[in-house]
Length: 318
Image (cartoon, rainbow, N blue to C red; front, top):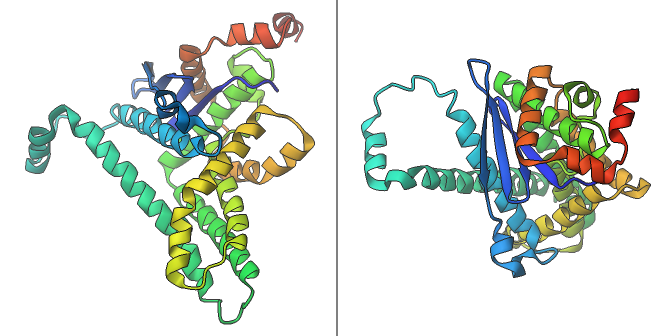
């Protein structure tokens, strides 16, 4: 496998693919046509190089991915809005009047902040409170920290299982699979076409699902070492250490995505297993959308020429 540098995200009936500062969103519209939008986004770590220092950059890279992801998701949703011609409510008219063209970015910011707060509450604080119930019968701090970590993972798995029952989420997970398959296809030296993508793996070590799993595992290690006497200090530690844990997790994920070894594969395995919940096998129409997104921002032929000389002859022989 050769690192390509491209990554992506599933959106509503489509895929976002990013290569450096360039990203493209490809969506299968209700009429069956594929619509592609290209744009650029400059990372905050490029604007302020000191934020790109290892173990610090992870937090800002995560913020970058959230911003680009929300932009892509908002655009994809625009093709599937119900009752587009319906009259705006007075509240919507007031928002348009007060905020004007800035309304969309403001709403996006509010949604991101709310989502982040909810994630902290559900996946960081709730497991702590649940495990704290067992404090009287489990005096060991180490066992309590491990128990809290397993509760955190269990909550995440239950959450994914529940949302995956929704039809729209199922299709999004299928598009997620097509995104991974496209990247795996290229990084294993194969021509980017439907047949090769279909035969490629739907799991990838650089996936955001793996990042979340790594965060949960590393958080166990941190909280085993860091001991606090009161519930309030435990709450503060869970919140304050999020950037540190995210920074360490990003470095591991970045390293794993660029290197192949038995040790890396073993350490990456939990995240790959978790992707079994968030990726599904796509159909050919979804693969076509993913290919359109890749080709809009990435010259895969030049990449194969550089990293896999003679790939065209191998394809012909196959």
